[in-house]
Amino acid sequence: MHPVTGRGDRPPEDLTARARIRDAALAQFAERGFKGATIKGIAEAAGVSHGLLQHHFGSKQELIQACDDYVVEAFGGLDKFGVTSGEIGNPDFMAELFARSPLITRYVARAMVEGSPTASALFETGAAVSEDFLSRMWPERFPAGSDRARDAAAVMAAMHLSTVVLHEQLSQRMGGDVLAPENSSRVAMAMFDIYTCMAEFVASGVGDEIRDAVVKQQSPPSMKGQDDE
Image (tube, rainbow, N blue to C red; front, side):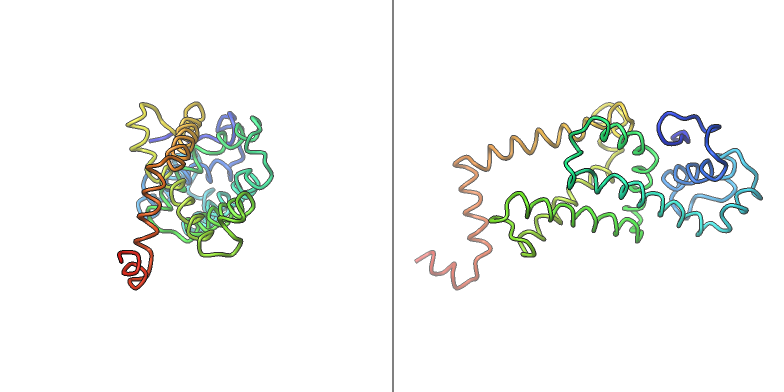
């Protein structure tokens, strides 16, 4: 089981009781699922009594809601991952993201697998940010509000979030916990390398052939017949 830690490098004893309970809940829900985690187990992991947990969070559902709110606020506070502000290239921004990520990202991974409303909301946010990015960077290819921009953004968000859902498989393959602060940048670098190489491939003659074949498959049946004549 992953240890409970607070934001940054602060030890658990430096956090308030409420924050310790929340962080313990994030870890327990991520590890055991929303049904499998228990109030008793969360209280023990946080080092508090059952009564104190209930004082801060009246029920398990209220605790889940508090975790959901914290996760949404944490990502929202990072300016939609820094894409819109350009801060994603700032080392301090990335350090803050990685400092927050271990507990939060594991929680998000579990939420994605279990299909929680918060996971859906985070996906929608990621897709909206991606669509805005694509339309601003390549307005002719991805006109704002177009199906093409929407589809590309949705797939882009799914590609990125799949690395969160499959973090255990990635960690095993890559030889280190990819959600740990010291390793989490490896996924980003790998994805950057892939995008760079794929851009070169798509620009090649083979890429043109593949794109033409896909476009032909998308053409209405009547158009296909005309192309074959």
